[in-house]
Length: 392
Ligand SMILES: *Cc1c(COP(=O)(O)O)cnc(C)c1O
Image 1: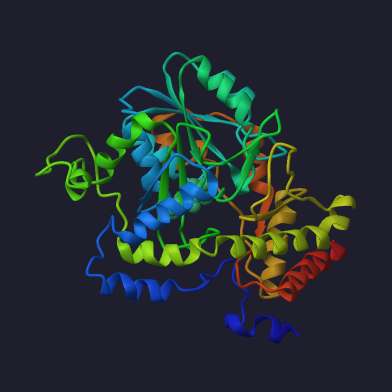
Image 2: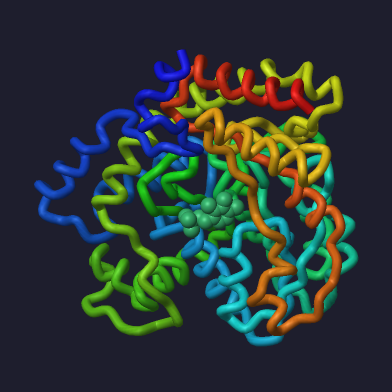
């Protein structure tokens, strides 16, 4: 049984595996045959419109990555040296880089121990008249407390940037019961189509512009700071350097692959959510026994199955579990080292403590979750987790 479970994976069950869902390769051939494989072609607009319409978002522009979408957001906000930005330390490095590149002063916030998302009280502690942006992460696709965060950010007219890299097809449910897709609530949203995410294109991303006033400048920033997009539409007869910008436009090859996935996103998501639920069902009795904590989904959030994680009792058990799973040929990983303790940040900042972030980073473990994972493999992984806790 063991070899059957892992035979396709050269004898190790990987943490992630890129996949083909449908017509990705066919669409790449179609793009080449069309005579245009640089950015801004038919597959790019089809992808952008599909994302916009499926999730009732504002304008969507594909980017070369989520990192680049965040850099665009910092450029569009015209962040200046000395401006202050608040972000969670339990975070991927991209948003920190995006604002640091503009010379911003970064304040790292602690997280809520239940959701692992930025704690609104921490934003209240750090916000001031100098704050220009609050850049949040919907960790594991579980919504941040958007209404509270919006109230706090609005009080100083700070922009909200939603890092929705892990939050494709997930929602925030408002107090009045209505819901809105993540990435569509702040002034800017940023998606990732990196090979480790739910919908993939190798490297890729998108910026969501929820404020109409940002659209024209965003097209310029994405096209090296020029109005080339207008030239393509025949609105101007030459293009010039208008703003600070860069090359944030993905090729049609990327967009073609992406569209092959996007048109099947419902199937992909249904499969992932079923695997996620299976993990939870297999492991809930161990949670009741107190072995670890499973992901907590508050009443205002939905599940998009981007990450399945456990919070162990302590770092020693977490590391022991990673080692034990590896002996059983399963690759499980931890997540994020706290950014407020990173070597680059500490070059320019005094050391301080964010107790929840430091504690969670030492205890979290993520289990394999990808489109081609089978139910039997989930059972094998869950059983391996069970064996570990039986032995200690
Ligand atoms: C993956 C990820 C990113 C980076 O996405 P890229 O498309 O690789 O740039 C940023 N933020 C979070 C929370 C992520 O998970």
